Structures are given as C-alpha cells and as structure tokens.
Length: 79
Image (cartoon, rainbow, N blue to C red; front, side):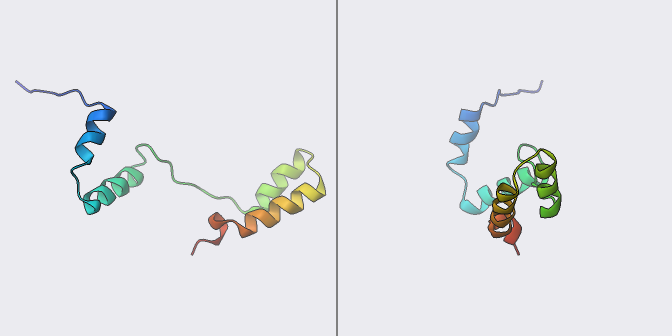
C-alpha cells in the first residue's frame, strides 16, 4: 500500500528551510524550466508594442515616452 502525504504550501516552505542555497537554486531553475508556475516572459519588438498603443489612440507624446521607457528598461537591455 502506498502512503501519500498531503503536501501544502506551508509544508513545502517549511521543508525548504533545510535546503542549501544550491538546492534552492536548482529547484527554482527546474520550476522555471518546466513552466510549472512561472511563465517565461516573451518580449515583443518595441515597434510592435508602440503600434498596438497607437492603434488604441494614445497620443504621440505618450507613445514617445513609452518607447523611451521601453528602450531604457532592463527587459530590453539584457545581454
């Protein structure tokens, strides 16, 4: 007979307190890789984002500010 213990978030977090930092990093990477909870961010081209906002009628000043902000953002400046 198989014994199955009900896992709760509290029990998982409690158990994780005893993991090494390396183990925690490996768990985080496995969760991300399998897209179990976190979804990978798929960035679009800045031009497409600006176009989408333009189609919704946003002002030229807003679109310029948005484009400048996106170009400076860490998401679009990752190596």
